[in-house]
Image (tube, rainbow, N blue to C red; front, top):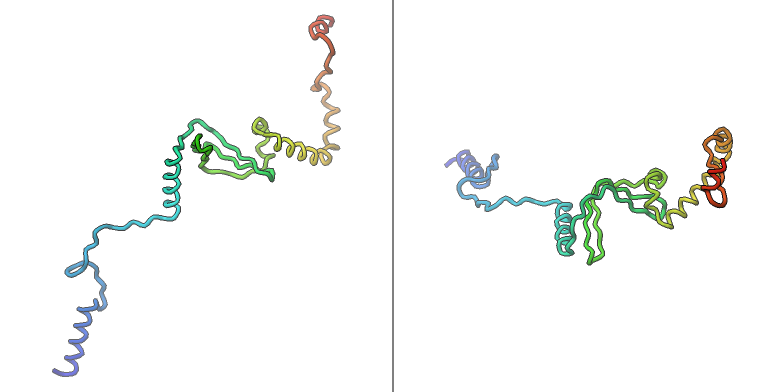
Length: 166
């Protein structure tokens, strides 16, 4: 056997034994994969763990809640629109999930006043006191022009007698 024949035989043997240039999977002699392993993301795993924990607590869904506002000490509000609300009364636990936005208190003011507690009302009064000196000079002339819209003075005594006199 010549040197060239020996080199060709070695190349053929290496190609057959180690795959050579083509790396094929499957075929004769390969191990059969029993099932396809699906990897789960970390978020999906944490959601599954959270779901099992909520089931252990016995949390039930509360339907019909349109918005939830969580007030922070710095004057900001975490605002949820159409959240999924679950409650476990025995564990004194409420779960609020869904898209949220962190907004300043002033942005939600007209519709949120009925939800404010004593702490938030004092914050609101402080904010009004801070903005009053800056806007006080501009607001005074406007009040003089609209005398028709002023609230009349209260009358002491029986209102019916006063109304009959005029």
